[in-house]
Amino acid sequence: MAITLSDFQYLQTLLHSLAGLVLETGKEYLVDSRLEPVARAEGFDTIARMIDAVRFQPVNNIHWKIVDAMTTNETSFFRDIYPFEVLRDSVLPELIALRAPQRQLTIWCCAASTGQEPYSVAILLRECFPAVANWNVRIIATDINEEVLERARAGRYRQMEVNRGLAAPLLVKYFRERAAMWEVREDIRNMVDFREMNLVQPWPFLPKCDLVLLRNVMIYFDVATKRSILGKVRTVLSPEGYLFLGNAETTMNLDDNYERALFGRVVCYKQRR
Ligand SMILES: C[S@@+](CC[C@H](N)C(=O)[O-])C[C@H]1O[C@@H](n2cnc3c(N)ncnc32)[C@H](O)[C@@H]1O
Image (spheres, rainbow, N blue to C red):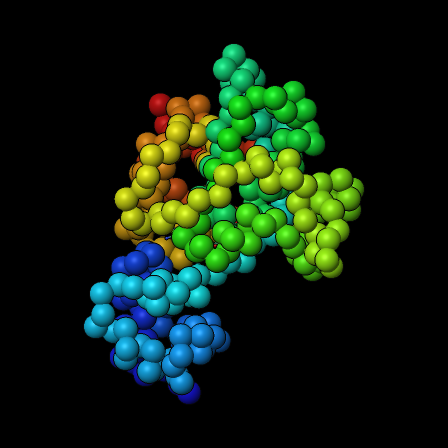
């Protein structure tokens, strides 16, 4: 059943206030497919009845389930490949040389979804930088959606998921086949610390990061939210650190305190000194 304008506007306000997400007019079709299962699981006949029931309630579990269901969790291993080549050939060698005295490296994936991105970084480190195997390497991987984080922590992927972006030799080396799924090797899983975190609510303490991956999430935010998040990322990014955004994302016209660092066709960002 088509969603009413008033229900759609309620969802727009809810998603924006809880998660900073912009649900654009014209995306009504998303609501049916994503919220139908939530409505059913919560015991409502229709999405409209669920919205009626929660509309005037203080924020509760159902509101968050609605937010979770409306997030787009699309991701893949070594997504867009070129940024990972730059990490391998330029950025990580530089950061590793810089951090050699402390033997410590801190990386944050801000919107980790089901884990493919942080595991790609962990595999890259294991595969190409054996010298850091006994360093204190911290990969913090956060997301607003507890359900995707559960999947990420389990580190189990369908054939279709590992087919996207993962070279066969890496699959064989870093995963094991288990109950028709591919499970990330335990030592790689242990390199990543998955935590729930909402980028638009007050941030918990985070250590200074050498590398921040804030990829393919700012596209869902409005300009004010992008500005605020980029500003807060600067407080966490070490002065020598790098920020990677998604292909369709930029700091330009949002935050002049970043400068572009260009590696071939890949743009990443550093704090302006
Ligand atoms: C499209 S995925 C991107 C995954 C990965 N970074 C990549 O590029 O492949 C976007 C992720 O951002 C998360 N997200 C959306 N709003 C968020 C917020 N306010 N705080 C933290 N994570 C959020 C979603 O749950 C989703 O998993």
